[in-house]
Amino acid sequence: MTFGGDGTNRAVASGWPEAVLLPLAGGTNNAFATPLDPTAAGLAAALYAADPARHDRHVVRRPRLELRLDGAAPTIALVDVAVVRGGWVGAHAIWDPGLLVEAVVARSDPSLTGLAGVAGVVRPLDGQAVEAIHLRFGPPGRRVLVPLGPGQLVPIEVHDVRVLRPGERIVLAGQDGAAPGQVTLAFDGEREITLTPGSVAEVRLHANGPRVLDAAGLLRAAAADGLLVAPGVPDRWGAER
Image 1 (cartoon, rainbow, N blue to C red):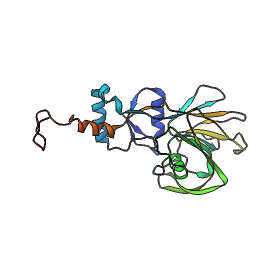
Image 2 (tube, one colour):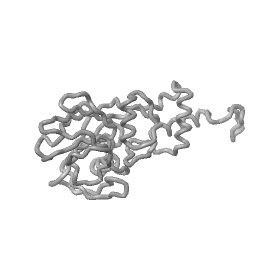
Image 3 (cartoon, rainbow, N blue to C red):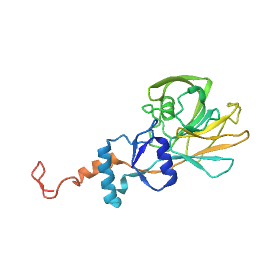
Image 4 (cartoon, rainbow, N blue to C red):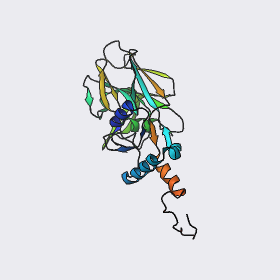
């Protein structure tokens, strides 16, 4: 079980790719987290840990974004990869829409904050297919009201939108001149790499991302199977379990 924001979950998924995660919201942006009461989440985690084989059907793969810079080893993101203006590097949410150049977002939902919420306002995804959204910001574009951060409903201009599918490639960092000056790559809200002139940052979407426990689905199945009822106790219809 993890407790943190999107950056925390990215750190865990990077260090332990095959771990089964049950992520609880505890950060600034929580697009990757499971919306579930922590006590219920703990029960689901205990049931899974006690019998992983029985509950394996409730483990689902989430997509991941993979970035390669100048052909080097890949860096992953779970929710978004963004290009932002400036050379400052560090763990700080992007709340200034004027800093955004472009982004690739693997979770698109208007009920979320951060870039996942921005993508959701412009082009929501239903989660049925493995897709991501590529956004480019700035004029000329459509002005939309977006939940960029907690309590931060701001207008932002979206220049264009493209749906990205597994295996397709997006080259970031303003290669067409859209991002003059110094720019930084941010992964799940954490600015990590300052791009040098001529660098090529390539993003691809992959279906085989982190393994995440569907805790709500597991609890529903456990209740239906009687796993939470003491043996020999009659139910309300008089039958014994």
